[in-house]
Length: 358
Image (cartoon, rainbow, N blue to C red; front, side, top):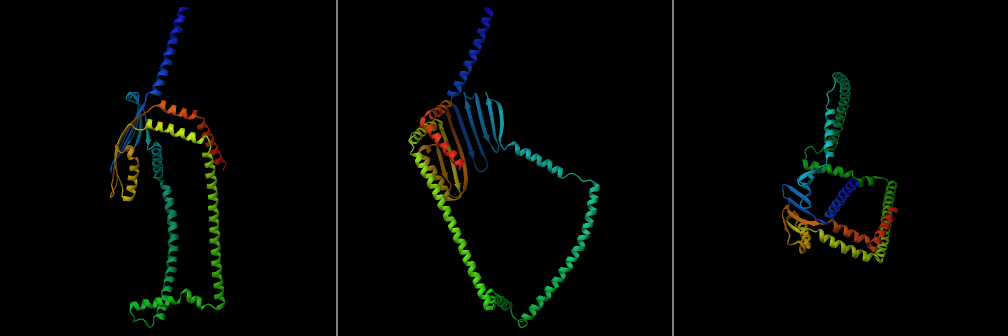
C-alpha cells in the first residue's frame, strides 16, 4: 500500500511540475517583452534590409533578411531550426524547369523517313508555286506596261505645250489641274435637282448628329443625378449613424486605447539619414513637406536631405523597440468588453450585409 501511495505521490509531483512549467512559460510569453530591430541601407547600387525579433534575451530569434532574396530564419539558442525563402518563390524555378524540359522535347531529332517524305512533298509544292509565281509575274508585267502607256498618254496629252517649262512651272500646273477636280467643282457640276437632294441629305445628317448628342447629354445628366442622389442617401445614412448615442463614446474609447497601444509599440530608438531627389523640384519639395509634418515628433532622429537636381534615393536607417503580448491582449479585451464598441461592431456588420444585398 505504501508503494502505491509513493507512486501516486511521484506522479502527482511530476504533473504539478509540468503544469507549473506550462504556467511559467505562458507567463513568460505574455509578460516578457519581445524586442525588434530593423536595419535598412539603400544607395545607387545595392539595397539591404533586415528585421529581427528577439525573445527571452535572444533565446528565440526570428530574422528576415533581404539582399535581392528575402529569407526567414528561426533560431533557438543560436541554432537554426527553420529556414524559408520568401522571395522569389520556388514556383518560378519549377516553371523554368518545365519550360526547359519542353524546349528539349521540341528540339528532338527527326527520323530519316520523315525527312524524305517532307522533302518530296516540299519539291511538289515548290513546282506548283513556281508555275503560279511565273503566271503572276506575267500578269503584273502586263499591268505595269498598260499603266506605263496610259501615264505616257496622259502626260503627252496634258503637257504638250510644257515640255520646255521649268520644274516649278510643272508643279504649279499639276496643282492647278488637281484643284480643278476638287469636291466643290464636282458639286457645282451637278444638276440642280441633285444639288438640292445632296443639301437635304447633309441637313438630315446634321440633325441626326445633333439629336444623338442631345440624347448623350441627357443620359450623362441622368447618370449624374442618380449618382448624386445615391451619395446623398449614403451621406444621410452615415450622418444618422454618427448621431447614434453609442458612436461617440465608442470612437473616444477606440482613440484612447489605440493611442496607448501605438505609444507602447513605437520604436524607442530611431536614427535615419535620407537623401531623396525625384528629378523634379516640385515633387521633391512635396515629399520634404511631409517630412516637415513629422519633424516635431522625429526631427531629432531623422535627417532628410532633398536633392533638387538629381534623381536619387539614399537611405541608412536603424530602429529598435519592444512590445508585450499581454498589453496587446489587454487592449483587445478592454475594447471587446465595452458595450458601445459591441454595438458599433453590430452596426458595421449590418451595413456590410446591406451593401452585399445591393
